[in-house]
Length: 201
Image (cartoon, rainbow, N blue to C red; front, top):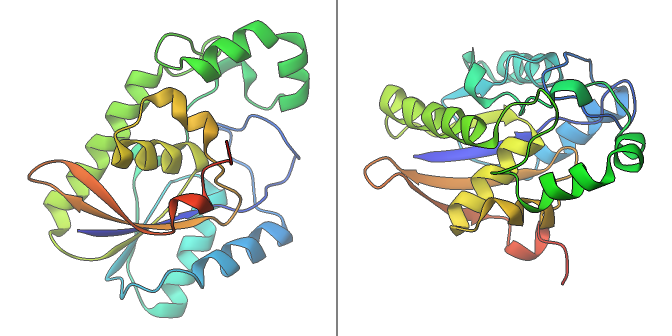
């Protein structure tokens, strides 16, 4: 099954931990998604979107423009950041540096206070992808989702450890194309090349 991934664009509120907070795109964020969409070219049969408006409003407009059905999928929403949600990223890193470093280097053992455990996040995202494959078979899909979800799928495709997620750069409007084999539950990356999303060593 061909899956094209599109990350949402910049949002109102600046550089904060958003997670499950529902905030709108900025005008610049909308433009970032339009630009990212241009790099994806599969003849999609439907669009699958996170229920959060920073994804769903753009997905709904693309569906209207292209006469495609749009479905929401709760399993591909962002990881929950718990007490960090809505808080500036720089301030949290300054005030809770030890926890931030532990979380970023070993997300399987450390989570934000009150946050969604990484194992739960991974399980729900991969279960959603598997469920989409069962529902839609070989249909090519466009998934409008979040940075954490995309990083998880890229690291899973590479069979990297979750700690490698911190080394990935998935900017606003980032797009990627994957092939998913439901029999083996493995992914392969069709686009872009690894150099486009891995920070230089």
